[in-house]
Length: 183
Image: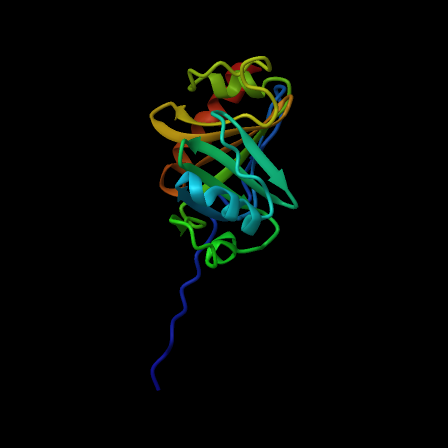
């Protein structure tokens, strides 16, 4: 009888964390993610299906019941669901023209928190992360070092860094070095 091999995918950066020097890094648990593109006529129906109002201003986000929608462009959002719901399935019945693609396994999220969190990120990100320019709830697609990230400010001294899993080792190493320097 033939042996059956089963492959299991380990989360990128599983169990990594770093603390001290006024900043901590923590790899967040896997979440359901959706890349959403939609025409203006479909936004109301998609908002209703997702249970939150899709933000329509640059650098904005909306959150409700473990689900967060980040505005990435005039017709583009990243929807992150940490409540183990399926945002793609929630959008399936919407008739308006839209594209909802599951990108759950594409991204890895890293929480950067502490008094030196903004300085740590600014070591490789040119965006002004002062509270006045990038308040709590602000979100944007930007760069960190040599890679694209999506950045969300979750608190005065707290950020969520979303990056593609293929760049996650680089992003984590970059943030680790920057955290040491920020301290």
